[in-house]
Structures are given as structure tokens and as C-alpha cells.
Length: 171
Image 1 (cartoon, one colour):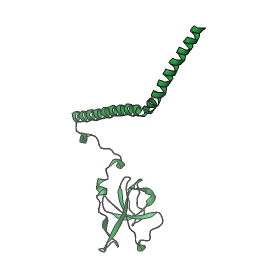
Image 2 (image 1 turned 90 degrees about the horizontal axis):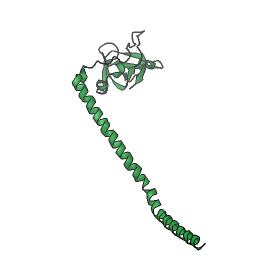
Image 3 (image 1 turned 45 degrees about the horizontal axis):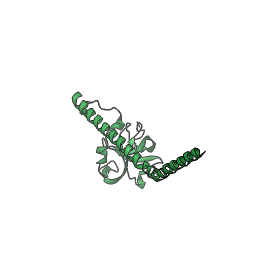
């Protein structure tokens, strides 16, 4: 019986020491979990970034070897064209107000891109194809525009007229 009590006391002292060590180290381990995850994720993301850069470099070298990037076929989609020319457009456009030599300056309110082809049904209407850029001009009282119609000028050829707003989308 004495031997069993001695073993019990020795086990209790070992348990107390281990418990004390755990109590001392557990909060530090728990707090360091954040830095561990941050370090691990940084390493992973840096490796991914290096991989993407290498792939991009490889793609560029393959393009160079296979031919110039400019030699690729151009897209037939009119919405793929760049709008750099439209962005550099002048804010005011001189237009013919009466069809004669009386030229007034009208302010461009915004630009729209034609989503559908529209064929003019009247002399004052504007015909356009899908994808064309049209400058929406400020209208006067004398223009007498119906609801849903806008006054505009085509960027491509400068022709002016009214057009239905639902055939376009703003840029």
C-alpha cells in the first residue's frame, strides 16, 4: 500500500509539472497561430506570384517566336474596338442648325454606342450600324424632340440627326 501511495504522489507531481508547463506555453502557442498562418500564406502567395510572372514571360516569348502580336486577326466584334479616339473627342461640335450656312456650337452631353442597327425613316433622323459611336448633343426648344429621342452626331462621318435612345447605351 505504501508503494502505491508513493507511485500516486509521484504521478501527481509529474502531472502538476506538465500542467504548469502547458499553462505557460499554451497561450504563447495560441497567440503565435496568427503569425504562423500569415507566414504560410505569404509564402504561398509569393510562390503563386512568381509562377504567374514566369507564365506571362513565357507567353510573351511564345508570341514573339510565333509572330508579332499585331499580326493576329482583328476581332469582328465592334465592341472590342478601343475607345481612345472617342475619349479624345472635342467637347463641342459645330453643326448646321438649319441645313444652311447658319452654324451653331452645341455642347456634347455624353457619348453613346449603338447596340442595334437603325435605318432613318425621316430626313431629320440619323442612320447608324451597331457599334458606332454617337455624340449626344444638347438640344434646344426649337428641336422639338419626342420622348425617348436624342439629338446626336456620328463620330465616323459627322452626320447629324435625331435617333431613338433605346438603340444605344451610354459610354
